[in-house]
Image (cartoon, rainbow, N blue to C red):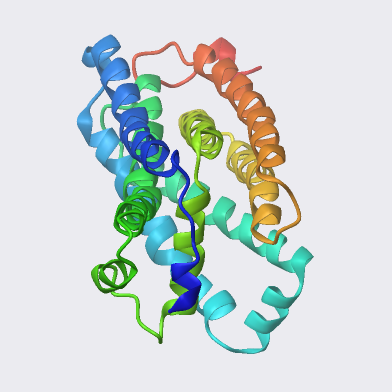
Length: 284
């Protein structure tokens, strides 16, 4: 397959991809170790596991089930969404916001009734964001690293066999190999920053939803959904080729700060042992 033979890998491809893989793992691990050591008496590992399970069920099972009908399968709905950028962006952001935030709400309100604390709400967010890296992003990054290592050896045929690339799936595999070839330290920096922003967003949204659960105020779930949708707007537009990656990073940084500021204010209100607002704070 000549299209693969003409791909040239830069000198920075392999080291930058390897560094990205390492940092992708280090981000959630470092956050967990730091938070757990700082708040061990107030936190329970069950909340970390609940956050991870919540993401898998809400985003990788339920949301993907809807995506299959609305995006993947060939029908009038999928053709309309895929053929209309505004519909695609609105659909993608709405589904992510609704499924992930409602998943948080259901788990925190109906399942995680024990050991409620504001510290556990943060731990939940670390589990949610951490498992997203491990099951969604890390495998793709490892595949890109493997492609870079194999194709850089100069034996294209062996690389194609090792990656199970055939004439039938070559068109689908080509973008992955091209992306690996053009990967550099600049791209690595943007990818790592995006994950840092996403991790803190998930922590902030977990605190916001948790506050709504323990305070009984219904407005905080819709607030979390809207903030999640706003955060995902530029990434969805990037997927359609409308924006450069740097613009996405700036946008995500802004909404991470906004979400974090709201979450921090609510976190400070929750002073009681079970993480719920004090009587005075609840009235504000």
